[in-house]
Amino acid sequence: MKTRAAVAWAANKPLTIETIEIGGPKAGEVLVENMATGICHTDAYTLSGLDSEGKFPAVLGHEGAGIVREVGAGVTGVKVGDHVIPLYTPECRQCKSCLSQRTNLCTAIRSTQGQGVMPDGTSRFSCDGGEIFHYMGCSTFSNFTVLPEIALAKVREDAPFDKICYIGCGVTTGIGAVVYTGKVWPGANVVVFGLGGIGLNVIQGARMVGADKIIGVDLNPAKVEMAKRFGMTHFVNPDEVGRDKVVQAIVDLTGGGADFSFECIGNVHTMRQALECCHRGWGESIIIGVAPSGTEVATRPFQLVTGRVWKGSAFGGARGRTDVPKIVDWYMDGKISIDPLITHTMPLEKINDAFDLMHEGKSIRSVVTF
Ligand code: NAD
Ligand code: AHE
Ligand code: ZN
Image (cartoon, rainbow, N blue to C red; front, side, top):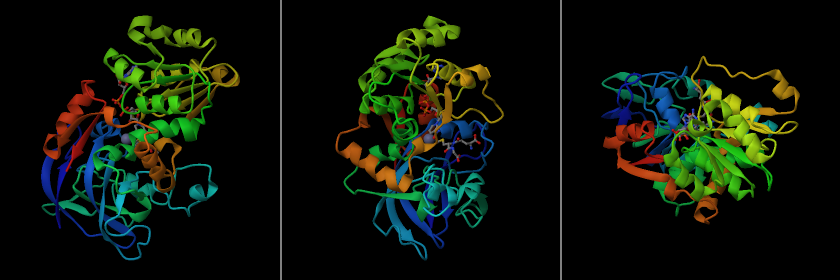
C-alpha cells in the first residue's frame, strides 16, 4: 500500500513530503496508522548528520501514537483497532536484559533497529523502487508504519493521540529519569540543565515526587515562564552568572551541592558541570542528553572518588509495554500535565517548521497530526 511520509533524503536537507510504498506486516509485525507525532531534538540530531547510526534516506520520527490496522502472523500482544504508542525501546520480556529486571534496554532487536531495518534485515519502506530506511524502529513521520509487536505499548482508547504521542519519548524520558532512573526522594534538591521538551518533564517529575529546590539552567530566558509553571523554583542563566561559575552558583543555592542533576542538553561541557554541581559523597548526575558521536565527557576522577555518581538514562529507564500505559493513565488522571508543553501543532506538510522552531528556541514540543 501507499502512505504519506516526510522523507529525510540526506543529512542537513529539509524533509520532503512523499507518497511512498509500505509493505504489509510480516510475522511478529504490526501495521500502525499513526495519528500524531512529536518532533524531538534527537530527530534533529540525526538529521544533522552527527548520529553514527543515522542512515539516509530514512523516515525519521520516534514519538508517535496511532491505531493498529493489520497484524502479521503470530502476533498476540495487540489486535486490529487497538490504540498504541510505538516504542524505540521495546520490551520483549525474554532477553537477558528484560529478564534481569535491572534495565529497560531490551536487546531483542537493537542491532537491526540501529541499521534502519526490521528484525529480518529488510525495510518495509520504498520510493520509486529505492529502499528507504526505518528510524529507531518507529518512523513516526509516516502516516502508516510497521513495527514489531514487542515495540508497541497498548494504551487506553479515550486518550487523545495529539497529546499522548509525546509520551512516546519526551514525557517518559523526563519523568522516568526522575522516577525510575534516579528514584529521586521527597525533599531532594534537583538541578535540570536544559529546559526544553525533556528538561521540563524532568521538572514536573521532580515536583511530582516532592523535590525541594528544583533549579533550572538554560541560556534561553524565554524558557523560564514555562519552567516555573512546571515546578522550577530557581533559575540559573550561565550568561548571567558566568559560564565558568555555574557550578559554584548551584553549590551556593543548594548549600553544598545538588542531590540529583539531570543533563538534558546533549553538550559534554554541561555534562561535566552537571556532575560537578552534585553534592560530595552522594550527589548523582544523570545524563539524558545525546552528545554528537565522537565527543567524550571529562572530569577529574577525584569528583567520583569523593562520592559523586555519574549515570545515564534512556527512555527514562521505563519498560515501554509495562510503564507507558501507566504514564498515559497519569496524564488522563491529571497527575501530570502535557498540553501546555505542546506549543505548536501542524500538518505533515509543515513539519520542517517544527525543526526551525526548535532551533530558534521558540517551541517546547511541536506535534504533527495526520
Ligand atoms: P530541546 O531543544 O527542546 O531543549 C534543549 C534546551 O537546552 C533548550 O532549552 C536550550 O536553550 C538549552 N541549551 C542548549 N545549549 C545550552 C547550554 N550550553 N547551556 C544551557 N542550556 C542550553 O531538546 P529536547 O527535545 O529537550 O532534548 C534534549 C536532549 O535530550 C537532546 O540531546 C536529545 O537528543 C536528548 N534526548 C535523550 C533521550 C534519552 O532517552 N536519553 C530522549 C529524548 C531526548
Ligand atoms: N544513535 C545514537 C544514539 C542516540 C541515543 O542515545 N538515543 C537514546 C534515545 S534518544 C530519544 O530521543 C537511547 O535510547 N539510547 C539507547 C540506545 O540503545 O540507543 C548515537 O549517538 O549513536
Ligand atoms: Zn526523543
